[in-house]
Length: 133
Image (cartoon, rainbow, N blue to C red; front, side, top):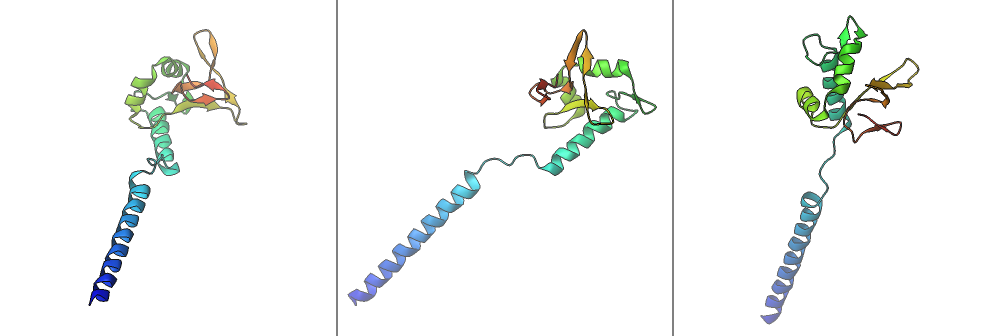
């Protein structure tokens, strides 16, 4: 009869070890993993939101007149501070609004006497090694 009890104790020990192992795996994969970064799809959706805000006639951030960029509106956008701009556009990720020519070359914009401004947006984003704003 004592052999039967030892076999049950061994089986119980193995079950406890398996449960502990599974618990550690659960903690490792689900609790300790890095937070999910923005997906390409969500970034594309936010880019569309920014583009719509800049081109929509009803938006206060509209910089277009009849399909052409209005220089005064663009200057107002460039001179605006990033936190209120991000709040007005209502996106969660950082962004940089910049302009390219038909060949894909970055067009430098002017803020006052400074021509080294690549766009409007987050100062932590660099375009061609120059901060966005």
